[in-house]
Image (cartoon, rainbow, N blue to C red; front, top):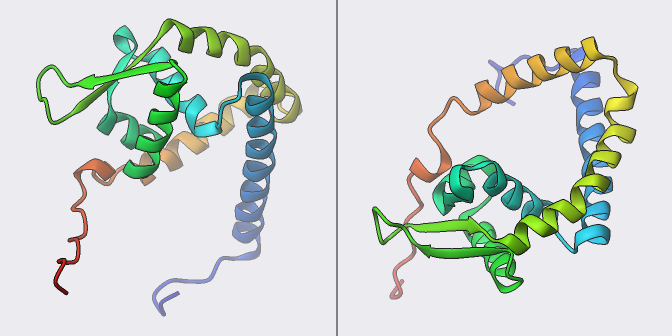
Length: 169
């Protein structure tokens, strides 16, 4: 912390710690459900859901990485696992052969159909059942504002990559 950054007050600290705890508890429960019902990681589920919501069920890998806030190498690994399982297909981009397009397969849609009921149940039970409609709207508005602020910087795919060390030194 720099001298110019004021410390968190008690209310800010409490809000931050509660957010971290709720996020961790929900993520853990969701990961368990996805593994049990579909042999999927949370990241794999997010990839499949992004593709499910995308036009024609396809996205560029770069757009997936930006949307998921996941490292390129980590996303490539997860995509390879999904492709090996037949849940997605990867191909060179139509407009730019240097890019990769990822498409949801019928098997991927079927896997989502298998895990979604349990996923919805976990989210309802652990998060949404504790909130009324006004709380949900407020939570969505507040977190949306925070997300938008955090995403106001250029996407990660546009960020300069660090130079690789030369093989000689």
